[in-house]
Length: 152
Image (cartoon, rainbow, N blue to C red; front, top):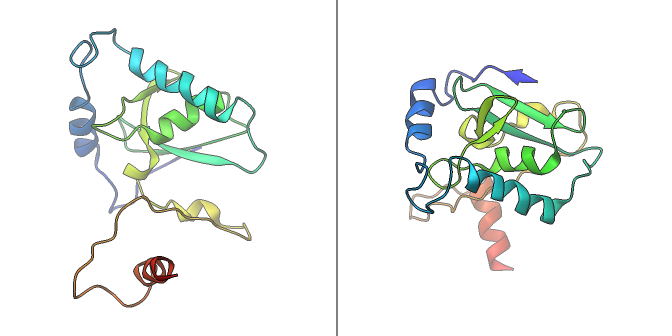
């Protein structure tokens, strides 16, 4: 399922720059074009297995258009490949090829993608970003929750 990026999302021009900045074949590992990406998929297969959980979905950003794609049990790709695409953080992990298209971290489109949770009773959102700590920090919202968790 493809969705167009929102107006505040990453533009195709920015995506092009991120994809172009990916490590080139042979630069860091001396290996072939997609070797590291395939190693990532293999590692994830060992970690998550190959069976899609019934209620699990993950997002990845199409690296050429900026469209968001939702992978789930109805997708015709393996769970490890979908997770690898969803985790392909620009400048850190290589883009993942799926059906002739390059995909990278779904968070480059939207860090939360909460719109896809409509109709569900529960949304679990994880933020892997470190909060900015300074005197003018907000007193409510996620920052407040984070501070409460740290103090207990």
